Length: 443
Image 1 (cartoon, helix red, strand yellow):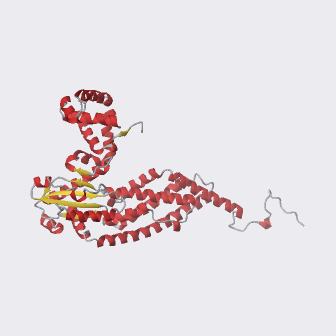
Image 2: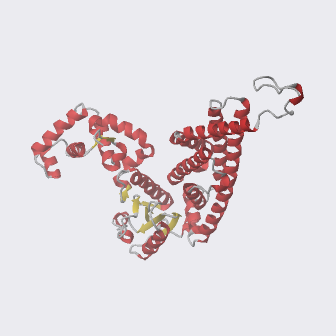
Image 3: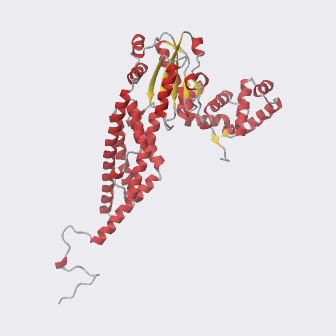
């Protein structure tokens, strides 16, 4: 009887493995574990970089999808949707969760509903997923090679990621299409939807003349108008129901808006009319919502005719941006009072850098420094007169003098140096608050 070969020697010719069989069952199981660990490890690494990966995709989306430009609410929801999708995908690949066990992330659903409310095209919504799909796979391929020992292992790991990504995008896209269509249907059923579309057309289309605009809006545009934006934070409880109640309350108030349309589920656009500029300035626009501290108002300046209809609305939108940027947020924001901040707040990061340069050490966000800023601002507005400053602030003039000297020490240079920048920066700080200040070291 022939002696069997030893475990360490070569296989005899008559017992060779069948063609194509490269691994024994135990070896295949070991390889499966290696591939799974590689995919899981890369997913964990990428998930730890979620903020950077989200920002990378946001930059791509803004460059490739023009429909998301210029609408702060859409851009914010885009960021939240992107982060939530990436987090779900990373975690699913990390823990081996099947695609059919995954539902649409709530921020992605909210983004889709807002897209539908704005009347933006479904194709633009889905394009983000196709762009993200491509970049997502690239990230994994760049890392998998370091975690797999063989070309075969790399191929199997890459195939797992690609198969998951394609299946995920297909599943989520199908669900979002349904959400989008349902939201468009519900939005179209609202009685104000048609008017809102007409108003948007008047605002956006410069070729619309005043006569046509009056027909489309139902307003006498030769009168004075005051544009108002009213909104609630979208994460507030019962926001949809409350905004419907606000619209009903405003229509019953005195004065009532000449035109009131929904911009989305938590935002209303209104225009109030008056016979004169003085009457428009005197309008009490807080009456219909005074009892609800969750409602925010942004108010433009009085203006006339079609150009004024557009201008006062644009000012209200810019005042809204100031209110949303400010920390803490403002409840009522008038463009006339925040004009400088409104012009600057579209890029808060650049404003923060400029404010820091203008104020020096006065940029710290704490109570003692805030007192110094308030005193300096009042002092400069009072023409550098300590007595007048003391009267306006209800403090002793020696206190004013001390604070002014202390402010110069903290700033690191005299108040007269780059005074225009200093005065402007102090106004911006008073209006935008902590969003442009530097946290104190004690926080």
